[in-house]
Image 1: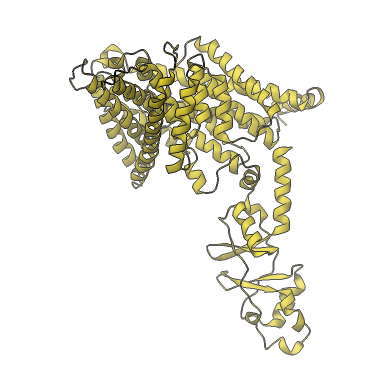
Image 2 (image 1 turned 120 degrees about the vertical axis):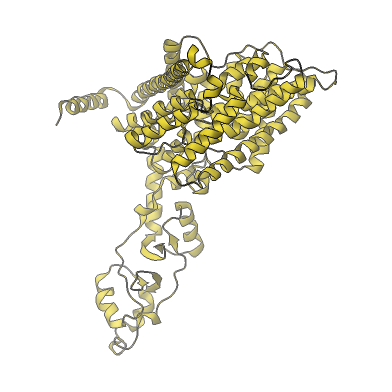
Length: 593
């Protein structure tokens, strides 16, 4: 045994003897928070250095022309990294983590610890209009999963540490610890007891401290409220909530439509070229959509809409507020297209920050419209910019609480809490009516792989149907004689049910021992009666692709104790109700213990 393994084994033994389980979880939560914070710091710095490299004076003179080239270069680099080095697909961080939680007991592939850390900064640095929050979560949760496996922690603790990594990544990115914790609970639907909040708090603190140590007190979004909420603005906020809901629906529709369009091209290189050209064209027209877009948000919050819009190729009157409003609305619409195209072309990133960009532009434009419609009424453009971010987050991500607490924390107070809650509630409700699942969860929900706050459904989601299939049943053929069945099947089987299949192993029906019992000892029928005489249809048939929840329903409807499992029409085995319920109880204890 290698020396390192011996040393690690001794450490584990010492830990079991001297540190309680709860204390060790606290230690691991701090470690995971630190690692998640470190990953976020790396993402920020790597992206920043790439953008600095592409902003040297010589290139700056040609930057608008290079907007067509940069996305192609970035996406080509990522394609090479994926094909030559990783040789694996890099999924969307949060969706991949949700899948691992629901179907893999929280076990996340090790390559996720570094894959997004390398590819996301290249995507964003070279102009990809996506965010870094998803990759930060992806790397952090993969590290948390690996750490839990390294120290032989159970499934429930692994899930908790994944939540800690998520909270840590969010906290480190925005320096918003409460929003980080709420995000972990809201998006991942983790079934965490009140006592488990302490590890989440420790992870958030560790991540923020790490961010301060490496990045100082600078924040991506920093703003102090100067204008307070006025009750007579409540009507405007109500209308605005509906608008954010509409744009949230637009965001989801555009995302899936562009994804569907690009994936009709089987060759990835074709998708890369088409996507790069589209992104380059959009960036040429609207340079403010380059990369994440924090500059746009911060400039809007400062009231500098000209800097936010950027140096477009169009000449327009900066004093014409209606032109500015139109450009802000165009930014809102094209950000969704640019982001979706970046993903479809092979880029790696997240959707969290694009929602903030769209929300800020929409909110600022809405406030400008009110202030210039001649109502004799003036609202705070900065406040609507902030609340626009809340509305889009609540609608697109289906995370209203995260949206509320994030904006409250980055503004350093709760003066806008009433409009934040109002707009978040309206936007979320409106979007939920038209788009029942978020972008994170839509595909998982379609496949029946989405974890929820329902504990029973979560347990069933984590169960693997293949592990429930029993194959020690003796198959018979419809043309088989009764005597042959008794000799070759009944005499050698401990079961009282026999699947009937043809030569191609296609499932035809079942024969019950109770049905042939009356003639078992009638030797005259052994060579004159075939099995087809006693064959009957199964009360229900389980498809191997069925979810465990669906299997449960089939047992309930049929009242049977054993049901056949079929794959592409061919017999696979049986699932018994007793084994299913036993596996359910075992999994429930494993998850909740």
